[in-house]
Length: 572
Ligand code: FES
Image (cartoon, rainbow, N blue to C red; front, side, top):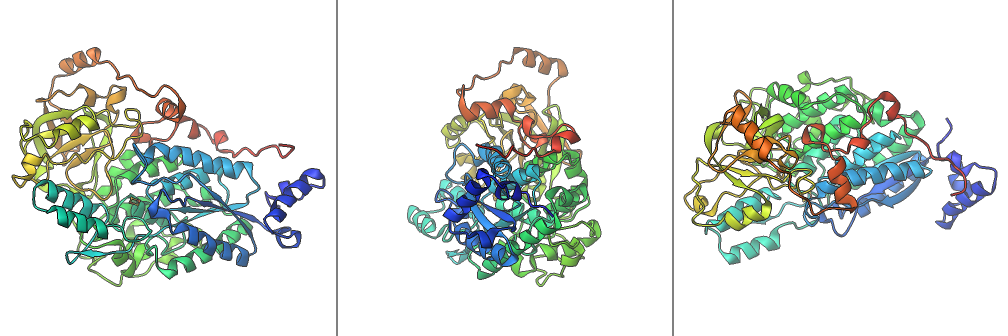
């Protein structure tokens, strides 16, 4: 088979010589690279992203594998989307990184690519870019960080931070304890060791079939991760030889398999946006309705925080994704192909620990772990991770208390005179994709201090923002359309009654249609400060959450748009 890179390196003229000399500059001899596939390594390593720090070493192991497999590895760095430092949210830049990856692959002599991602948005960004390029691709993830004990308890990333933060606000944790906790929080490279968005997306990549088995759950600092990376390096060369591309793996069956695994592990709500966006890149039909219907028939069987009690390394020891797939195998398309060259049926294995992956006769909850809600407040949908929501609040009607911005919320939330009770419904709006922009993880509105001090630990909260996968609570998210484009959330007034009904999948503002229409007529959109630059571009082109918040111009509209247009190989 003719390699794509040959269009650059086999030219008989001065351009061929110039192109080959680029590789020689890096020490590759012509005898070594001639005729071999060029494997790009798209590395999202950065010192601004502690979760992805280990990928620098992982890349070296991938290179070893590529060379052993008969390829030429060339690494490039992508923007790195560190969840903790990037503001207002790494999500603002997911689509930008996907474009960066697609364009690096288009513009360069690449035959296949190994994607190195970890912290939340890097994995979907890399996968979206690779899907659009549709060159042979596989993913190696960063792995979860080391588990350290504090006060005799293992620290779960994010989940324990939110828990102890509430303890501190309630006056139950001293300043010295808080300081001690800080010293033990996050003690190695690696992604959150709970079932946050990074863990979820790594698991989904494995479930989709674009990662070698076991890659999702191996801890970051485990030597087996490097061996996995080396194997992945050899495997990408094999994918190029066999011309296996993402579109052959990322089919409707693969997405249904991924959704089954997603519900079985109780994954982060962020994954909904990423799966919708990824499917959209390849015109695979996938909608919010698919999430609701498959959730109804998929048991939650994995006991990892925040829905359970264990951590990611426990899931790995229990058998990882192959064992989860084994547990729910009756629900899977077992003949779906993977980058191993074999169907997922060949990867399954029984669990080694039924305290982490429930045995067939039991599940973590007796109901679906996630629901999609509709109603006059969310005509195009909203979601609730029921697995972490208080059952007593699944049917609840209460008065709204509205915050119009994050700053507004933080300024008031600890006010001892805040006029709310445990029955109130807290609303945070203008926090969506267009509103901020970038729909940050502000949806888990803190419980007001005065209620925390009364022992309240959960209440109904609504937002057009997202929530960290490490968070929990009765939090309705991704309300669509969002407030900033005139969604009904913008029309709620403090004191209005809001009704949530999980059983019937409804979310409604208790108000007449005519009164709602009157408010809609009077509503004016907020003026954004972003008049230029990437944030302005983002606001103009971002789609709503029911379409994964991708850019409108990145989604193909017809089969013709799926073609990956090659550059003209001439003088630059
Ligand atoms: Fe990076 Fe959780 S903050 S993975």
